[in-house]
Image 1 (cartoon, rainbow over the protein chains, first blue to last red):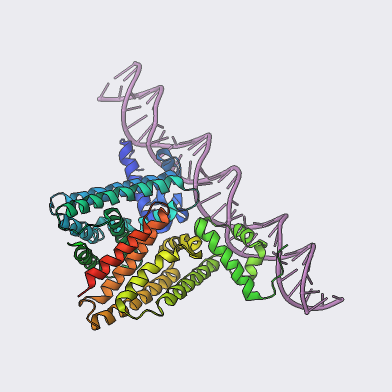
Image 2 (cartoon, rainbow over the protein chains, first blue to last red):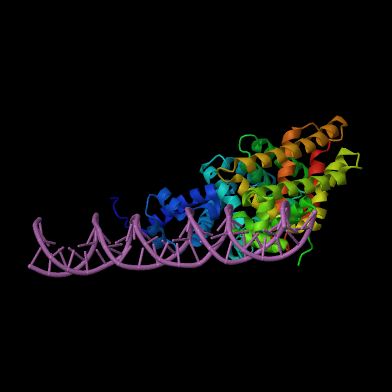
Length: 201
Length: 201
DNA sequence: TTTAATTGACCGGCGGGTCGGTCAAAAATA
DNA sequence: TATTTTTGACCGACCCGCCGGTCAATTAAA
């Protein structure tokens, strides 16, 4: 019925996008391959032409998600010079992100969190840990710059970086749970103000 | 083999405790009733004398968890008067908690998060939202006091409360993922300092 | 002995993954 | 160009192991 696709990698990507949506909605265990197939508009068997297993599909979805997220943040930071402003931009970038096309992928994050922590899921956990480690270093280097420029007080920059990332995740999580009532914009704004005031010399 | 338990509710509690441990380790979908039974040292069928279904068991485990957690925090706050110190105690209470018997239950939290957000899990989500709403109000009232006493600057206290709770969750989450390397003590301490400095008049 | 509690073998459905068949399109041939 | 052959992407019926929940039998308590 549908014409055959010539470009393998494009179709793989198409399946991945559908999978992200379904995983985000139902989680790993509750997602049926048949459902993913339906969402992608293909037969179940076809998925296995592109992915070895459900598990592989899930973790590839994670990779795509992380990568797109990283690119998005990077782009926002690119033409901000002042470390203080960089921190603010970084924090506020989240609220924009949550109103972008990422909104539908957001639920996936918690699935990944849960999944990566289960006993025996060392591969996923390692990927996760690595991702956060990179984020922390990124923030740390902004903070270090700020301290050097005497715009921030001296501090344990790694711990503060960890705190900032952690807090972002937490606010994100709260918003996920209660998208309508949780005041994410205000909470982020307050957070940015408090962090900057609290860190200033 | 196991001593016969006379008290029905005591046995129910015993099963619940075992279930919490198993759910924390494997999640809802990956936990087998046989495994819970084994962990509790009883036969699988017996569980169904005390709980209607796996689902009911899971959500009762959640209730127990939340309740014990609330009691623990409450106890810490009871003889602190100064709002500023209350905030600090509240924040630092977490690090103590994570070194207490709660440590083994901690993973359960993320399972609950993930589960409560799945499509169709309205019951769980509602319970979750309610819990956080209560927490937010609790913190808000401390902040309101502080503002009244001119110890904190004027602010959107609800948003700040949401921010604080969210951040706590986020730090907790990060720690869950990387218990050995994530500097939870320092991050919490920095967070408390920054928040208090940032909120002070 | 009667009643209550406990148990684990068993059942049924469910879903991940397989595999032989199909067919559109590309390649080869005329 | 028209026709035949080959390819491999696509599919979904089927297989089979797994696990939540049941219940007849067993054990303990009254």
